Length: 257
Image 1 (spheres, rainbow, N blue to C red):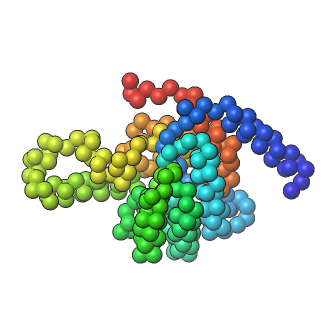
Image 2: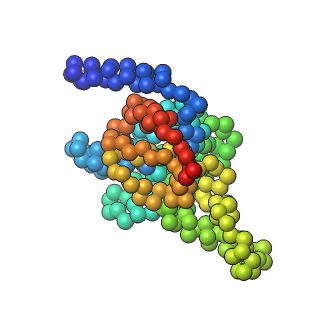
Image 3: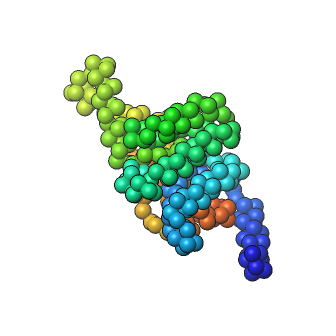
């Protein structure tokens, strides 16, 4: 590392401490959703492979959750694999699934966070399903940040699964379709989502410069604030995170009012 890079790094740390010092913890979002994006482009820019980019992105996750712990965040949802990602070439998808499985096991072994899967488990290979089940069971007692790992997740898929679950539940209870149609409301649908009994995201962060949700938590983000960051996920820094919190705190949330 040359002198210029060293000085730049020191300045960034000083600036981050300044931003953190002015952060109002009463205004910190309780639930943050993160669209983890840009790992492949980061790798390409660095002259590395897509798999190298995914590994670098995986290494960022624990660091990010550490920042969340320091700032009183209670729930974090990390979108690690979408339903669309299954269309990627096998030579990329296979290693990616392995990397994500390692992430799940690492988060569970850390002991600071409670792990919960959001997504369609039937879409995932058996080893991944087993890793997720084990992580949820082994961290159920943890009194720390609830970490939703969105794996095999799609917003439309979640709503379709919620409707299917609602219909099957009505069938089990002997409820007629007419009775169900009369009783369906927002709360009923929410009770069948992957995030049942969780608060909706206050803030959604997307890295890499893309300014769209791509189907992330379509139901839950109706009133969320969005923060789009140009930095690729593996290069996401604490100062970028603090800027997102500062931007969120400066907004006036009206919830349609």
